[in-house]
Image (cartoon, rainbow, N blue to C red):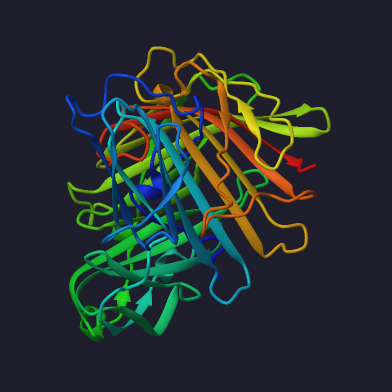
Length: 447
C-alpha cells in the first residue's frame, strides 16, 4: 500500500501565507472603513466542507459567533475601525481509524489589507449522484525502477466532485471506483518511492488521462489501460540559490493541477535536483504547478531542539526549469511554555516588502488520548501588527465549537514564521505567485 497519499484542494491547502496570529490588540482609528460613512464588507469563501464553527472580531471587541450561507461568511467593519479578525474550525477523521484532528484558524488583518479571502476545510466527497466506474490497468512497463515497489493512484472528477482509489501493484484488474455520475475526467498516476537520506519520499513517474468518461460505465471502453514509455513524466531541473551555510540539502514539494481540474495531486514529495512534470502526451497549456522549496538546520536551545528553516514557494503555469533563491534565515529560541504561548517574531529580512505576515501554529494531543489531535494556526498581517513583534494566540475556547486550550502536561509542537508574498494571506492563487518564509519550530510541555 502507498506510504503517503496527498490530495490537495487549492488554494486553501497550498496557500502561500497560511497562518499567523494576533498582535496589536485591535487598534481603532481613522482611515480605512470603506470611505465616508460606509462600512467595509469582509467576505470569506470556504471551499470543501463547511466549518463546524465560525467567529468574527471587530476592532478591540470580543469574538462573536457567525454563520455561513452557501459556504460564504460576510461581515462589516464600521467606518473608523481598522482591525478585524475571522476564526473558523474544521474537523477531519481518518477512515477506519480512531484518529481525529480538529483544526482552528484565525486571520487578523486591517481594512488596508484584503477584504475577501479564500479558505476552507478538507474537501468533502462527491456531493451529488455517484456511479460505478470499472477498469483494468497495466503499468508494468514501470516495474523496472530501482525504487521501493510502486503503486497506482486513480482519480475521477466531475466539476468539483471527485473520488479516488489506490489499487495495490502496477497491474490491477477488475478495479471498481465509486465516482461522480456524469461525464468525468479520470487520471491514473504511477508513483515510485525513494530514500533520500533518512526520509521516504515519493514521486510520480507516469500518468494517463481520459476525458468525457461516462459514469456509470467502463473506462477505455472496457479495454485494458496499458502504460508505455510515452506516459513517462518529464524531469525539469531545479536550481537552489542562497542556501544558508550548514543547512540541510534543499528539496521541494511539488503539486500539479491538470488543466480544467479543481484539485491538485502530488508530483514530488522531496524533489532535489529535478521535479516530475506531466508527460507530453497529456500536458496542456492550462496545467498549473505549485513548488515549495525549503532547507533547514537543527540547533539546540536548552533541553530542546529547534529547527530553523527557509523556503520559497511559487505557482506557475506549465512545466519548466525553476530557480529558487532563499531568504536569509531567522533564529528564535522559542516561546515561554504556556497553554496559549506568546511569541516574539522579530525579523527584518522582509522590511519594505509588500504582503508580509507573521505566522504561528501549535499542535497537541491530550496527555491521555493520542488519537485526538488539535491544531491551532493563526495569521497576523504586518498592518495588524503595526510594528509590534509580539504575537499571541486569542483564547477562543469558550466559544461553542472551538477547540479547548492545551492542558497541563500536554506536549505542544510550535511553529513561528514570517512570510512574504506577491499576494496577501489566503488570497486566490494565480500563476506567477511567489512567496518566501523563514521560521523556527520546536516542542515544549505545558506547565
